[in-house]
Amino acid sequence: MTITVYVPCDTTALSLGADRVAQELKHAAAAQGQEINLVRNGSRGLFWLEPLVEVQTPEGRVAYGPVEPEQVEELAAAGLFEGKPDHPLHLGDIEKHPYLAQQQRLTFARIGITDPICIDDYIALGGFAGLKKAAALTPQNIVDEVKASGLRGRGGAAFPAGIKWQTVLDEPHNQQKYVVCNADEGDSGTFADRLVMECDPYMLIEGMAIAGLAVGATLGFIYLRSEYLLSETMLNEAIRRAEAQGYLGENVCGSGRPFHLEVRLGAGAYICGEETSLLESLEGKRGLVRSKPPLPAIKGLFGQPTVVNNVLSLAAVPYIMANGGKAYADYGMGRSLGTLPIQLAGNIKQGGLIELAFGVTLRAVLEDFGAGTFTGRPMKAVQVGGPLMAYMPESQWDTPMDYEAFAALSAGIGHGGVVVFDDTVDMGEQARFAMEFCAVESCGKCTPCRIGSVRGVEVIDRIRAGENQNSNLELLEDLCETMVDGSLCAMGGMTPFPVQSVMKYFPEDLMASPRQVEA
Image 1 (cartoon, rainbow, N blue to C red):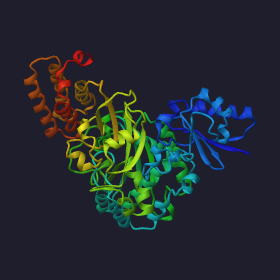
Image 2: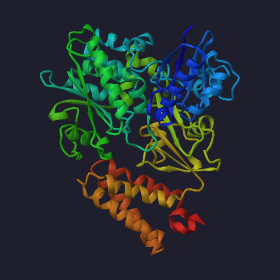
Image 3: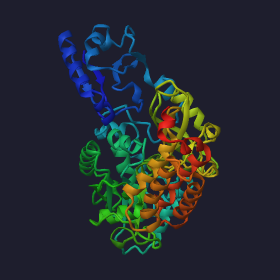
Image 4: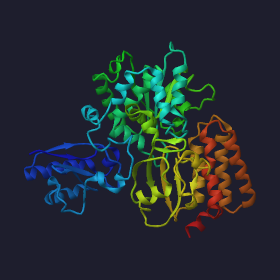
């Protein structure tokens, strides 16, 4: 009897030895005379258990992890191919693990289950149901469904996706229109976009095709982070197969409407995550921020009406179309509807992907899912939403993860990345890093960002050196206000947020010299 064995093929699992684990499983099976069907599935997002090996048994799939290549022989001897529990790495049914069982996976319902580029597996698990439904609707009907869902941009700005789509739809129909996916995932501690593209690429393809039908766009581009070479390979193969099956091309799902899709590698610049800078780069120019208005929805790529959405925004659309906008809006709280893919990283014991309805507290994410720090030391600060967001002290960890609730604290959810710091971290150095990061990554178009960040590093260095600390603190406050109010885009406008949070909640670290903090 042939037994099916699953070993993830995403970047995280590969970096931890998944390819070698797969090879050792083949050798161990051959030594036992056991035939196996080795499936390279996507990761389930429980990174501290990778590489996670699953075996199909008559009772269901049984998991083992984290499996190192050197452990495969002993696992096989202990009955891995039969799903036996006679080894410390035995986890049983991984879907019953508290980390997974407590989640509400709508967008990430399929990851980790099958071969990511097997189109038949995708269809068997409900894939393309949303696109087939959209193909029978009018563009306005599709946009109305997205509006009803309450979906907001998952890239950081949280702008309502339906309103953006409506703006593009309302532009004259005789124009070339585009759908652009921002897959230049650059925020610290984020990897959800990568998991979509490596573990369920057809979901993104389907979401973009639905967007194309909704606004009358015939061509889409995925602007992909240049380091994501595995994502590029997976996407290109998935696009090829989708075209062959009629889910892309001249006649999408028999709708009589065309939509073509291409992947373009990014320029390796953080600023190209900003939508107008991304469009400049996609046009072959240097990634400089554009002044707005006009908005990209009116004059975007090559001056034409363009939908620009993040991977997670577009990946949520297939569920919305298949199940209805109301089904999605039933999750969440206030104006933050649906689910949020949270990426737990940094100094954390159980890092990985968590998809939950908006409203869960940050503390619940850190304790119930993260299980505390990797070092075992107390947590000191948490940065949510990337390198331009505030460092949050423990007094704020009971805040529900909701766009408005976080904004009230001068914090932000951004792309959903959560980075944890323990009590050994020098928060003064983190404040300096924020300004230094901006100085390196600024496109240079506006003075507050280009010059302010350089001056910010200098002022923080003087404070840390004990030079006229009070007057330099006042200068730093003024500089931060100037950057917030005067910068052309969020790069300079948000860089002061982490600095201001350190000044407010961790002033002792900012005032102390690095040597004092280390002591």
